Image 1 (cartoon, rainbow, N blue to C red):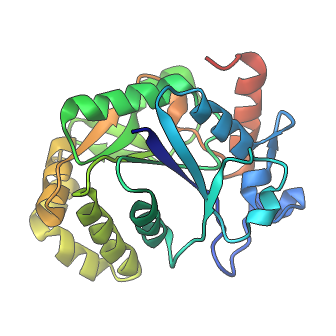
Image 2 (cartoon, one colour):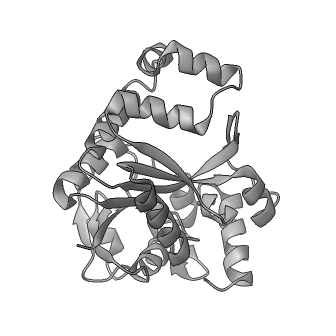
Length: 255
């Protein structure tokens, strides 16, 4: 069986993306980078990975991608929030399911292969790709990424997730609960537990602790997979990101 993929490309209801607005387009997924829409770059990278099966795009208006994506790409309508959309895709496409985003313009086949291989070797149910701070500083010096600082190092997410087995549904259900409580910090704290929050504040929390707690709450085995290239943490959320990605793509051919 091939590895099916979901690309999240939708816009939040009632909140037009400022990057799309500035470019005069409806969706950031169509933002051109070196003359090529970002989502097209993501799909091209995925198609170059051995073992990739169906590629589906989650977007509320598939027609905006007309001519930009191959005919064999399928579409899944978004649900109420990213977590619900991923759950819908999991119900439709099954596991294993790789999830990434349309604004991951630097995505390279080698990163996907390393991530999936690392997840398989771990025997996990769910894996999240991360880039460690030293690798980000080495490969994209000067960039500003959102860092999560734990006792065993700071890291940034890479917008790559692998829902490897049916048990992954428990993690998505936990995600849905936390997403629903995002405006209620005390509810989120109650779900995660006071102990893990205290250890985070005291800088005693490790990546293994986080994965273990998520596993306890979701009844799934969860791992974080550090990717060797710090560029994997770069997506296009703001004009400075677009400038950085354009410069990197102009200077270095895709590997």
